[in-house]
Length: 137
Image (cartoon, rainbow, N blue to C red; front, side, top):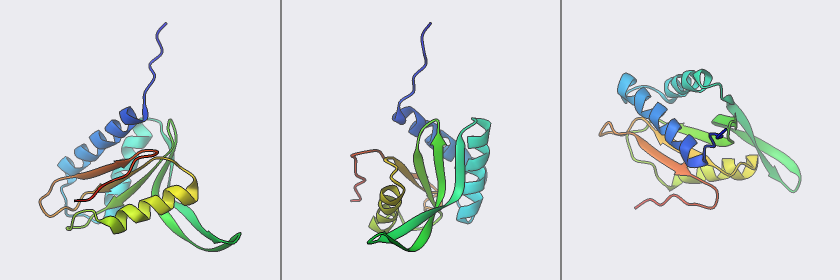
């Protein structure tokens, strides 16, 4: 019997398909939380184990100074942070740095940055796998 083994790239492609479907259906004019909720419907249908608004602690010298929140953290079938944007400007270093902080503080190797609000109506999908970087030209 052959086992169907998916790679992290396969999962990222699935998330991208979900994102494209969401953008096609909703367009690019809604606030971020609408896109998060739409993605949750896809993740539930696929039986992913995930949570939304996950606390990301900010620690210094062993003391928690505060926290931020990640939009979605997937725990199974793969571990990944998904951060959503609905902004007319393109993804910048600011958003990339935000995802990098979340990955470091939650000790999760993989992340995806998705912008649904781009002024030209196109989806911006930036996967950030372990040991890879996102470059902005």
